Length: 380
Ligand code: AMP
Image (cartoon, rainbow, N blue to C red; front, side):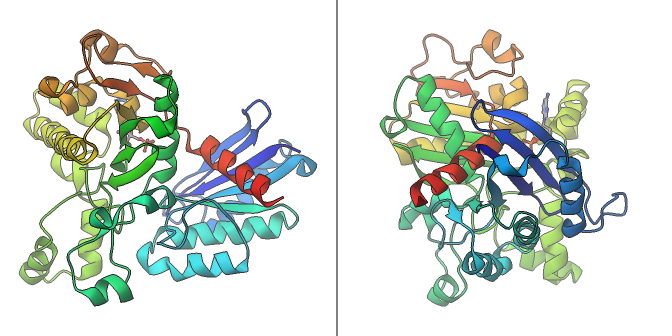
């Protein structure tokens, strides 16, 4: 019995993988997209889960299923690692809905559906925030009134933790060292994007904050901005907090600057002389570079800078732009290595650079499955 079903639900999608942990083979892989949208075929996450179960029919042998691993976006400051799910854990995830109003309800729906579908199989929650619970107070504290911090949970939580953890461990392995021996900066650049500073295996700072809106410029999210801007826009335009939230999360970022949230489109447009697209790329890379500088200062010593996720794994333009001008800090990419297309883990720094620059394809599903089994191993 060594199969794990991994369920990863976003606000409008469900991704699943059935993994044979003996040889790490994917027995079934699928996604239900555009849930609840007029163009989608599925009305809500409960209906989506029924489709997933129907699609798994045939591939799934219940007698071989050791665990169901759930990605849960927000674990607040309560969950520091993977957790065996019971009613109390479900209640806690529900209590955290105000901090993740789009994601935690979807995650809960899937947990409940999977518990009903597989009542005898242990279910494990793996939280996007858990890896960042090691942030020191100086890094996770916002300078706001005490009641906001203690009564309302206002602090930096950070996200993409499963990816940052997996990628930083792979980077250590590529350097031939243990995670506890290396300092790493991970650039997770996908549709959502975040940077993480990892000292000796522990996250010490990360660019996403109380929500996934802070930090880098993303596909449709603004990232960092002057906190006075939302109130200014509200006063000037009469927009509600919900509308402004929606704009900053769904209608900003590359989409607002260049008309597409897909970096490939922006890259193509910039190459044909589109000035708005070029500005979008420049701003995107400049923001990353600022965070590299900040996290170099936070870490003191850096062994590896690692690119991952859709953009980080595939875009030589962004990788080169992100480290442009950092040669004096020992960080650079070799033009030849950087432009070679590959799906493998690889070095892209030149031989003379002090710091390794790596590309590591992320694999959140295998990390969730590994953590799910680790919890069960520890419990037995
Ligand atoms: P993710 O969220 O990790 O799946 O990343 C999705 C994003 O990766 C897409 O929106 C694209 O902008 C970007 N992406 C995927 N492939 C490429 C590519 N070949 N070049 C540049 N960007 C890419």
